[in-house]
Each structure stands twice: as C-alpha cells, then as structure tokens.
Length: 271
Ligand code: SIN
Image 1: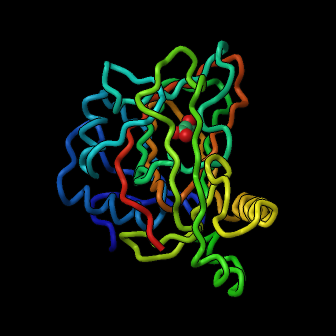
Image 2 (image 1 turned 30 degrees about the vertical axis):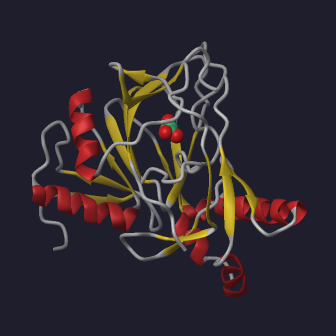
C-alpha cells in the first residue's frame, strides 16, 4: 500500500484529496509528514476535516514546509504578519480571492504553499474551487505548448486601498515569470498564468497578449481541471500554489466566513 499512516480520498480524478488519519493539532512525525507530502504532490490540494488548530500549531505546520511568506498587504492576527486573516462578512465590500488566481504570483518568488484554516462558515455556500494547472497545460495542443514554452509574462499587483484601513506591509510587487514553468519537485510542466495577476505576455503586442491571455484564462476555467470544496468549521486546506490556482465563491452575503492562512515561501519560477 502506498500510504500506511494516512488515508487518501481523491475528490476528482484530476485534483484534490481529503486526508483521513492525520492530526494537524499535534506536531507531525516525519513519516506522516512524508506521506502527506507525497499525497500533496499527487493531488495538488489536500483537505483535512475537524482540525481545531491553534495559530501556534498552524505556524508550526507551515514552517514544516519551509520559511513563511508575508503577504504584501493583508491584515493579520496576533500581531504576526505570517497569520493572514481571510474574513468576509456583511460589512465587506469585496471577498478575498473571488477571481481565479495563484497567491501573490506578482512576487519575484511566489509562495509555494498556502495553508488555510477555516474557523467560521456560513450556513450554506463559501466553497473554494481549485484548478490543476499541469492538466490545463497538458490539454493544450502540441503546437500551442511549443509556442508558449519559451514565453514570459508580467505579473502585477496593486493593493492600494484593497484592505481598507490596514496599512500594507510592503509595496505591491510586480515580476516577470515563465508562461510555462517546471515544478521544482515533480519536474512536470504547467501553465503559469492567472487572471488575478498576469497582465502582459512579453514580446507580443498588447492585442496579441490580451487575446492569448484571455484564451488561456478561459481554457484553465474549464471544470474538467477543477475540484470544488465545501468547507466545514475547522477544515484545513493546503494547496500547492506553484501548480494550482483557486477561486473563493462569495455567495453567502450577509453571513460570515472567516479563517487564517499561513503561507510558505517559494522559489523563483523557471522554464
Ligand atoms: C485565498 O485566496 O487565500 C482565499 C481562499 C479562500 O478563502 O477559500
């Protein structure tokens, strides 16, 4: 059997798995960590139900995967900028992550992982969709893949007034990344553009870039590349931010959905 300590229940043939038998409220032993890491590489996003973690444990879990990433502008909990607050209620003017995006892809070194602990859920709704960007790349025709492979694109963010009164931690980043990147662990190629941050493909005219990006965003938005996850209180999701993108549905106004995200630093994407 591939997994001895955890049970892995795939959500779709393409992406996502619910993990049973792991207790994230306690320090993970090396063997369980290693099985979780294997399942994560296989399914890209993992879900753990019934995990009433403290913020301290959440930080510890994140650091197990690597040094923590600080969001450029989002509010945080416990005076610790590594504890990003994800919160929407009746007074919110927008929802965090409502459009397809890969977290902070405008950073020179975008996060490799995001670990979201949802602590309060609306009575219905508030699901998150995740897309497998290996599958999106592999579904393109060979001539299209060959055309895209050497290209690079500019990712830009603008968090001015995005988080209301909260003062940004640093300037909104911008970076140039390959349109097709190679995952540093699996060695697989994947499509690395997202509607949230990718603005322009280098060396193409504005019109060419716009048309191609719109096509690629629509391509990646096909449900065959996705899973859709329904949260319960104290569910933890961990997504590989290098090879996925996600969209949080805001369909629960005026109810509240609230959680904390710990994000893990990644490295510079390469072709
Ligand atoms: C995010 O983009 O980190 C938010 C995802 C979510 O709220 O489900």
